[in-house]
Image (cartoon, rainbow, N blue to C red; front, side, top):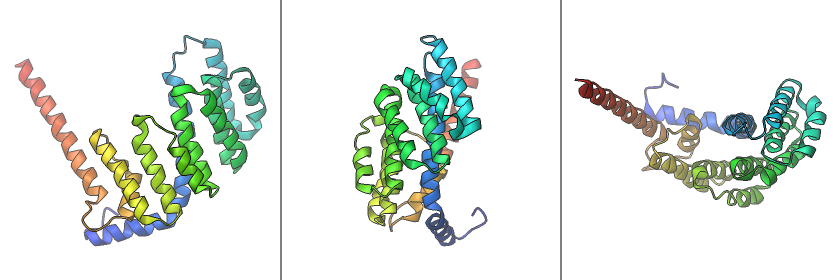
Amino acid sequence: MDILTDEHEREEAVRKWWHEHWKPIALGIAIALLGLVAVRQYQAWDLSQKQEAAFEAYQIQKQLATSGVAAIGDAQKFLDENKDIYGSIVALDMANALLRANNYTEAQKYVDFAIQNGGDLLQPQATLVLARLQAQSGSYDQALKTLDQVDASSYAAEVAEAKGDIYMAQGKSDEAHDAYLQAIKVNQDAKLTINPLLQMKFDNVIKAGDTPAYKIMAAQVQEQQAALTQKQDDSETAQD
């Protein structure tokens, strides 16, 4: 799409691409999020508290990554003995393996485990994944109610984007537009870069008077570059 010089052609290409691909992408987000959450939260946690449990969880994570559902049995034994943050991390990886095998019902069971036992560290992410699983099965209203349970302000953008995806699945483009726009504004207020996927989603439902998300992203990049240049100039001035 970079070779498209006409703005109208670019926007039409974005809309056509998103219309054809949004469903598998929305599910892919859920699967990717499961894996990322497990790895990041494992790394962030204070491993000195439970070195043995942490190491065992890591070993099971590797088994699930390489063997998939074949490692579910060993992983379940670990869950039975660790109804805590470590068990919750493993539960998310188990759900990930089951999603890859298209077993959504079983996957949801382990996401529920993570919500119940993951505490403040994992509960918001796991709840987001649960909502996407519910939407995938067509339980749109329930998915929206689930998203309303995520009260952590740090996940406001993710919640808004997920709601937009659900509205899109329902064919409610106006509601999807408002949700995606909210996600963009939250990122802007927090001075966070708008991810390319959110850009495509919003530009697919853009309305007259809206600033295309790709232009917002371009402005963000320019601001970041200007800030970096200013920082470098200030550093050089201080050294002089």
